[in-house]
Length: 464
Image (cartoon, rainbow, N blue to C red):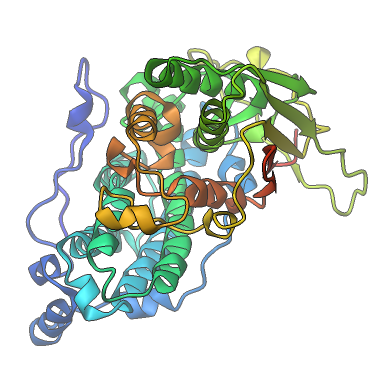
């Protein structure tokens, strides 16, 4: 495939210009725009090699936050930036192939659904833009520019994957069991968290590095702050995230219920650790949304929601202690200055956040279903028969607002627009984000009184 590329940096260049210009000739045949059985038949007739089965058999590299920060603090040198691009290229084709193969393994009638088929074709297209880069080395900045354009297109292409898949599985619920869909989505959501994060991390490093320094021109999040390495905040303060998300959700509650719940942050609110802020924003917004709503509907809005921040004690064993050593910035650029880097709270390899409400708890009939995907809450009449289905206007407004106004549901989370409102994906998706780097979410319900939710997050470890 021949890419018709343009330089990434042009004076006063609109952000939309950064989308990759791709010729109509695809490395996978144009029949990839149809359902996969047809595509496979055309592969045989036209002699186009299908790389998916071979790539899908390759093992997935287990991604860690340490992998994403190992290239150093921005602005990176040209060699460090090229190393980041090569690392990204080593991961993405295999990850995309695994998802394509998983979609091929679904029943044909399911993949024939227009929404599922659209996602399948998107993955085929994205893989076709990466395959020409395999077998070659990204050895100069011109290559790195073109490769970063490919990543930007990939991120844009898959922005609305979750709501589109949701509609597809909703329409196919007669042909595939809920258990099968849950297994597929659990695996798919976790996989795309890593795929999107890998791509966005390199894009952010590109725009915050010396050769191309222009954070404001990045088509994906690229915070210009000395604590950031790409999209990772090495000194993230969870208490600040809680207050920000709490204010946002409280505003929506007040608008729709006429009541503004209160919250209190206790424990050790000054704790910081290294994590992806947009992931934490999404999780906290979803958990506070549930707590605020339960509190208001239970008539306990005078009782504040209590959020406790508890850093994990340091692991003093040298053999088990993960240490990441980072090179300092190659030179001061913009807000990125060695002197401006805040000292890290290295005593917090991880953080647990407890959210406690007096919202009456969760009914024993509903509790087993809170981690499932509520496929019939799209306004379908069957939603009334689903335990715990959230299908009211107030929650839809909260979800819609979080889709457009909060960093939690845009950017790296990849949730996309407000069309996910009412699908019942909030808690399962939050758990996927929490578990991706070794954390998790646990729920303790005291029915008739309230609920405690424990969110455990694992950071990078000690950064030097």
